[in-house]
Length: 142
Image 1 (cartoon, rainbow, N blue to C red):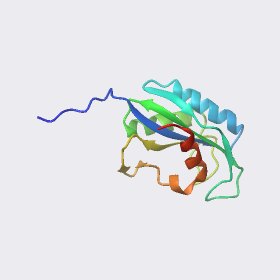
Image 2 (cartoon, rainbow, N blue to C red):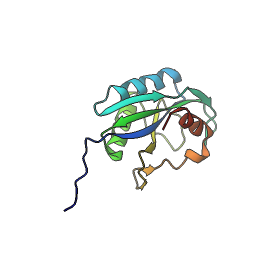
Image 3 (cartoon, helix red, strand yellow):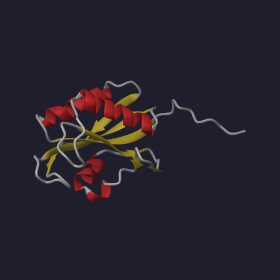
Image 4 (cartoon, rainbow, N blue to C red):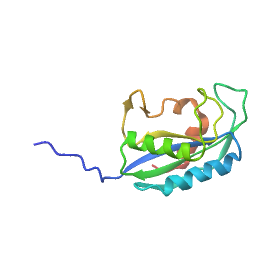
């Protein structure tokens, strides 16, 4: 007999938060508040905010970036959908890869999950290439 997974077991995830349009820091803080007010998600800790140069498409304003540690009962794909809903609530419009954005929410790490699908790759494939992400993750205890 196989044991069913308990969906109410809380998992730990780390979320990247960034903005380079409008009032960048306010955008990030609003996203953090919306995230914490979402059912099945509890923000445990946030990193400091860091201003960074854009990556990929460099002809745009600098980003304000940070990360947070959360506890959630959501699956990785449900969490992704929730983050995308928050992005839309804050006015994010899809432009082009690495383009400017009022808010960007990324799942960096989700518990010990490894995943590679069209919608989501875990851990986030750019973690090792972004020093500000590594720095933010070091601030958030395991």
